[in-house]
Image (cartoon, rainbow, N blue to C red; front, side):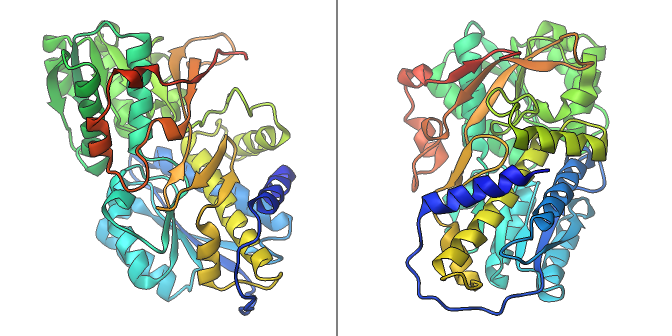
Length: 435
């Protein structure tokens, strides 16, 4: 099955070296309890349910291999679709009543902003496994919170670079984003960088329909009247799919270039509604046809198990979950090794998380000193091919995380304000479909 994960993690721990720490044995538990928040209801469940499926596959594989240091993991899921207040209560219940050892929260950026301080209050390790807002570690210093993937800044910079490097001749742009933290923050990053790198572009519309909106008629009518060269949408899940389907039905996808940095997760459901040439990203280097890892035994085993469980190819929340589990397993292994083979306490696991490098199903990710993950970004264009009944991603480029995000201690908006034309020369690794 996924036994290669174990080998990779073990090699990682050896490579990372031992932590300087006195050996203090904590009581070895019967289980490592992990609480996971994900969308299990509502429009965003098309995004959250695959995350749960991935977690169940990864936990079973981990337990089949003996668990973490001989201790099996037990998962506790809670629904982000229940709303922020209920979610916070469930988060607290899992920590205080179920006594979970680690939380993995959340998908929604708004939920991450609310739950990160709660994790600090409850003194529980929290792996931010999917949310994208860059504000988490730029506005606060945290002890218990770690993000095992990238954030909005490299994701937006990769999309903008791809647009400017491949289709630079545009003069107008409009945005249609969900009206909450992610939608607002991601547009602020993208538009600020666009202003610095191509200041002559005119923003003709900034549209923020409500989260979960079922009808985009008003937005599409306005865009048809304005006819922007480029339409950006960082929406995701059911919202993105509803917007693209309705835009396609009315011909909008044929008159503007669509830039959809999160659309990898919707390719299989959108099918022919997404036109060839749309720019598509996967929030990291996540793709079931990853040009570098798709032929490895580990990758193929996961894709096959995911298909057996769900009937679909894995999408980026599944890959983000794989990274969260790789970090969890790697941190405990590193902490156990540093503790002379004894079971570590929570502070020793936290110490092991700092600077941890781990590999899920894409390129290696490293946690910086501010607890933010360095995750490379894959982006390309949609293309219809005969092998699949939905568009694949072609003309792929993978940008190195270090090149497209600010250094530790610098806020993204400040860093973006200092960008100049040399940023357009950012290097990338290029791949085409079939490589």
